[in-house]
Amino acid sequence: MIAKAQRALLLAASRNDALREAVERAPVTRDLVHRFVAGTGDDHALEAAAEQRSRGLLVTLDRLGEDVADEADAARTRDAYVGVLGRLSALGLSDGGDVEVSVKLSALGQALGRDGESVALENARTICEAAALAGTTVTLDMEDHTTVDSTLRVLEALRAEHPWVGAVLQSQLRRTEADCRDLATTGSRVRLCKGAYAPPETVAFTDPHGVDRSYVRCLKVLLHGEGYPMLATHDPLLLEIGEAVARDAGRDADAWEVQMLLGVRPQEQARLGSLGRRVRVYVPYGDDWYAYLVRRLAERPANLALLLRSLTSR
Ligand code: FDA
Image: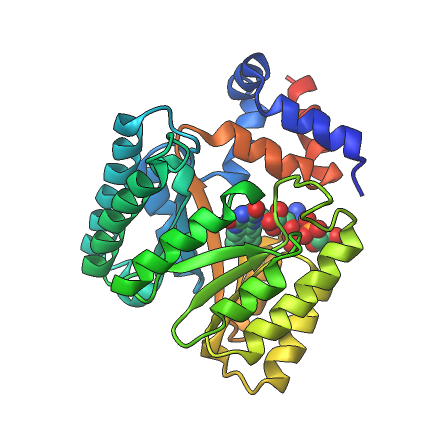
């Protein structure tokens, strides 16, 4: 397991512009970036989505970027999503939710002062209308623990018009088992992940086993519930437990799915897909790829070694 100090250092590196430039310049690190990020523009995202579909995998597209500075920025994010949904539809990729989108409310204005939540809601509503026209779904990513109540309020408002809007819950938070119970209702789509942020012990399990045990409790609630569970993890043990619980709960193969990130355990994604499991790949793209990349590296020492080797072997 990566040491806490090393992780903190990497998260600090995610805000370091000089390092970002070094990674961008080095030809070998560009390959590393491409392993985890589809590219910077819509064309790259659409190509990556088509490629995953040709392998029989489902896709959720995430336009990278968070914490916009003002309403104009938030509107640009909204318009970019509307644009890509239109293009997905024209290509027939979004039919039946095969390719959907994941959205961070902070990129739609959630943190912009007192009205941030309603700004984000209005922007998300427009994206949901575009998704409805494209015949697909939207899932709200979950950000740091201070945003959970606001994100769930936005979810509730959106679901009143579009019951298929989904949300992410993080097993690292102590509240999440109860949130799973609230959301395990008919038509509700919940993506369960461990959580990529560093919340304090007062609200979160801070040791990995506590997070994993919570994940198991949460997946049981979701798989035995009435909604559509989406287990987002690369953890072999949790995936095995998920399979067993889904079987116990009498879930058909199309009544839940596994989700993994682009570039992480691609062989396992293909293997599960070939067994008839619904597997969705989270495909991030956009100019703001650097902080995302560093978060992925912070999760796995082998990835970090790859980056360091790449930076020193020019
Ligand atoms: P973890 O990182 O603990 O890894 C567990 C085990 O998985 C490892 O021991 C290893 O066996 C295997 N493994 C992991 N990476 C591997 C690799 N590169 N190669 C081989 N084996 C590997 N977070 C958040 O806070 N909000 C969000 O909205 C989302 N959204 C989201 C969507 C999707 C589709 C996914 C998959 C993940 C997220 N996340 C997220 C990120 C999530 O919270 C978490 O940080 C990462 O998924 C990593 O956690 P794992 O569950 O994979 O376990």
